[in-house]
Image (cartoon, rainbow, N blue to C red; front, top):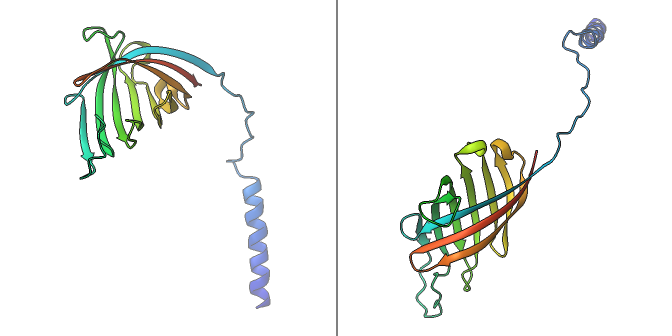
Amino acid sequence: MRGTLMLSWVLIICLSLVAVQSQYYSETLPYRPRPVKVTNLHFFMLEFTGITAVQVAQVNITSSDNNSSVPFASLVAVNDPLRTGPEPDSELIGNVQGIALLAGTNASSTQYIDFGFNTGKLNGSSLSVFSRGEPGLAVVGGRGRFMMATGVALFNPILINATNVIIEFNVTVIHY
C-alpha cells in the first residue's frame, strides 16, 4: 500500500513537469478589436401574392369576427426579389426569403426574413431580420460582409393591393 502511494506521487510530479515544459505551450496574443463599420443600404422588395408570397398555414376560425383582409393566425412564406428600384424591370440585386406570422387583427406580423445579396460587392452576403414589423425591423445577424451585424431596417410601403406589394427599405447595418 505504501509503495503504491509513493508511485502515485512520483507519477503525478512527473506528469506535471511534462505539462509545464511541453512544446505545445504558447503565449496569449493581445486583443486587437476590428474597426466597426456602418453601411447604409437602399433597395426595394417586390412581392406578388400567390407567386412570391404563399400562405402555408391558417387557423380554422368559424366566427365572423375575422373581417380583416389578412386572416388572423396565418403563416406566409416569402421568396421575393430585391431590386434597385420599384419598377419590376429594375436591376435585380438579390432576394428576400423567410416567413411572416400574421397574428393580430390589425394585420400586424412577426417576421423572420433574410435579405440575400447576389451581385456586386455584397455578393454572397446576407442580413437576417427578426422582428415585429412596426415601424422597422431589427437586424439580428448576417453572413459574408455582414458578420455579427446589428441595425435596423426601416420600410416604407409604396404599393399594397390585392396582388402586388412594393416596399422600400432603408437599412442601417453596424458590422465588423
